[in-house]
Picture (cartoon, rainbow, N blue to C red):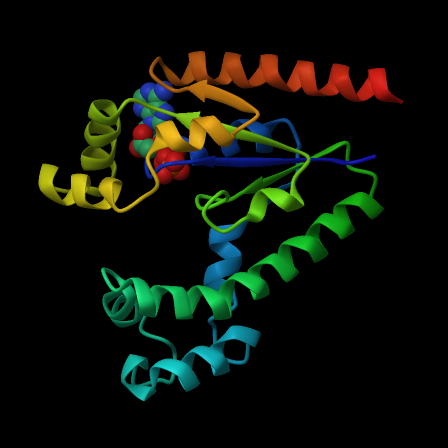
Length: 204
Ligand code: ADP
């Protein structure tokens, strides 16, 4: 039995840092951001539908989707964003499910689904358990400003456009707070992994 662990968080809360730990432990990671990016490449399943919906103005000269333009169209426009999500989310879920099945077939004990909008998209229904990487807002702003070279205002805009972490915490099975060092985060993740493996062994 493969345990599917959905990992979520806010922007710059530490998901990629957590992924690096899981990867080091040879745990397969299904990255929903990568999938979301890939399905909009020319010839891929979402490309045609998105171009049909939003028109040729979202295209670059070489026919690829200009993701910045598409983002500008939907950012701050709930209706347009909902339309884009209606096209992309089912395609992303299909791909995630295919990858979960592949990992089950190879006998993986645990597989991670990294999904920043896990709860917003209803993606938790594909997961057995969910983990939130949480962080207080002030530290989130600081780390985001540093990582992406953003002003405080720009960082706050990005953070405030997401579901509040306090709300996500209510929905998650496990919450790990990433306020300490990366080593401390890693130690907490290692402890969780032990627990998940123990629970699994107890079941079998
Ligand atoms: P996410 O993937 O959730 O957007 P990241 O894992 O990229 O977040 O973390 C955001 C930034 O904060 C990165 O620059 C990362 O190196 C840094 N970071 C993450 N965890 C810690 C930590 N515990 N201590 C210091 N810096 C951290």
